[in-house]
Amino acid sequence: MLNDEVAGLFEELAELTKLEDLNPQSFRARAYESAARATRSLPSPASEMSKAALVAVKGIGGSSADKILEFVEQGRIDKLERLREQFSDDYRELVRIPGIGGKTAAKLRSELGIESVEALKEAIAAEKLRDLPGLGAKTEEKIARSIERLGLTGKDRRVPISEALPAAERLVAELRSTEGVQDAMVCGSLRRMRETIGDVDILVSSHDPDSLARRVRELPAVREIIGAGDTKISFLTQNGLQVDVRVVEPGQFGAATLYFTGSKAHNIRLRQIAQQRDLLLNEYALADAEDGSVVAAATEEDVYGALDLAWIPPPMREDDGEIERARIGPIDVVSLSDINGDLHVHTDLSGDGEASLEEMVAAAAGRGYGYVAITDHAEDLAINGASREQMLRQRLEIGELQESYPDLRILHGSELNIAPDGGVDYDPEFLSGFDYTVASIHSHFDLPQDEQTVRIITAMGNPNVTAIGHLSGRMIGRRPGVEFDVDAVLEAAALTGTAIEINGSLNRLDAPSGLIRKAHGRDIYFVIDTDAHRVSEYDQMRWGVLYAQRGWLGPSQCVNTWSVERFLEFIEA
Ligand code: DGT
Ligand code: CA
Ligand code: CA
Ligand code: ZN
Image 1 (cartoon, rainbow, N blue to C red):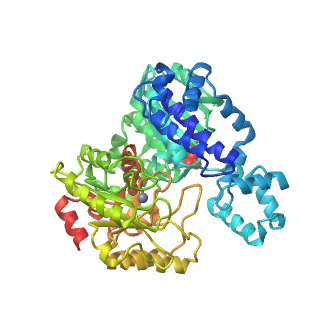
Image 2 (image 1 turned 120 degrees about the horizontal axis):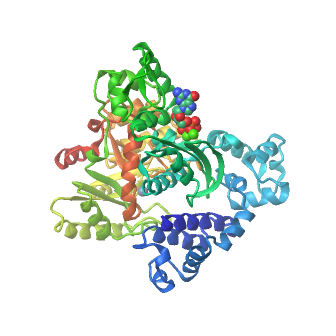
Image 3 (image 1 turned 90 degrees about the horizontal axis):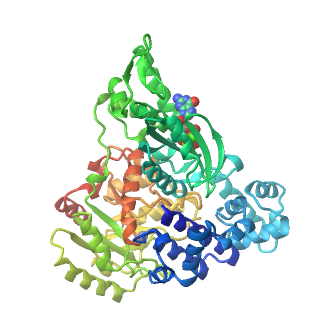
């Protein structure tokens, strides 16, 4: 717990240092980022380690070690407190708007006194930005559009899932290890894998709900209590996340998680179905409307079952046809245990990759996968791309490694860059030497919609492109995706047999679920990838799978659930 908490503080330090240095590539910020990763995977609690032991860990330097010790001893890091004062939450939100970097934000603050998105919107309405040196009317319009597309508006602000989910999972783990707790679970929009969330909902079961609710107040993650009743408590975390925790008796846990997972529209439909059967459904139970006797309450399966419905995976609960589907029988969506390989994996041959080829391959084998594709960045990507010579050398290394892994098929691939005209790196002959390629958009996000559509379709038509990576290129909460004609792109995927990636990184979750759903039941194939740049990121498969469920993806349309033989036939074709 402590290590995660300290890691979170280092991440925040990195974010704020970029603002202080007016440089997103700030060297000091990078040092904090590696300290965050290193701290998260320390073998023992940081409080039990000496400074010497901390510094000996790769990624932790002397000054980071001092900060860890400072936090262990004093419960705070001075430098962080100072930066928090200098850069308010509102100001930090400002910098998340595409088109506004640290430098522009600093200019807005010094020239116009703008410190929040609200103030920025007012200044745009008054056309004040266009007169600032280096900005102009075009930039002003672009920023206005970004704000609109991101839906960033004051108190309605929604938090990107990448900020909320890891923090919520840590809270749940902490609650589970609290005395008197039987079970704890993330509910609400987060369990439904919405891209952004309003607040975090957590459900806890305990035989003594009242005293437990009191104990929740004392969790270290709690910064400020904003409301508390007998069995409910709402608070803000140290990172400003709003959390509702509710405690129920274990016998009510299923009815309660069902209710608080929502969506509201899904709940309303369930309640109507219950009413038609003279039953009452609320957060405590499904009960007989007349005598109040409980029909089902302990598990979600019980409640759905009593309504003659199959259990519905949470990401599907949006009242978008899932209830009709659940009447027919069990719902066959992809699950983590179906996954047989990861096809978008980087090594340290990519400038931004951290683990060696050996480490990434060993970890894939450790997961019991039947296949893995090593896909380092291709040469056109500035700084991070690998040259032809490096790629050929890697191919030889893979050939040698393969001998040690008889049960894991190691594919030599590459992540290609889709140019504005739809072309990709290298030449056709060199490309045909790869077993597998995933082509992605890494630049020119602002082209008009029809150009983006042609761009993507052209890449799909390339016989050397197996899959399209993170299709929209969005960074949730930070950058909207490219605009393209979804129907035309799906049509091209069907015609060319090019797979569409579902990228499991919480910053991306891309292709968007609406597009996945549109492909449901058609001859269009998806591949759920992690885009791992380090060993721990193989875990992102879990999120990719849950997000795919939001698009109703079944294993038959997900190529990396297939056997090695069937999968190899697919990429050959
Ligand atoms: P959010 O927080 O805006 O991202 O979205 P949710 O879905 O997490 O909504 P939230 O936190 O207001 O409430 C959590 C769940 O509680 C919601 O998904 C369904 C349930 N719920 C809340 N209010 C109502 C209500 O008025 N009626 C019903 N049937 N369910 C509700
Ligand atoms: Ca919520
Ligand atoms: Ca809530
Ligand atoms: Zn990648």
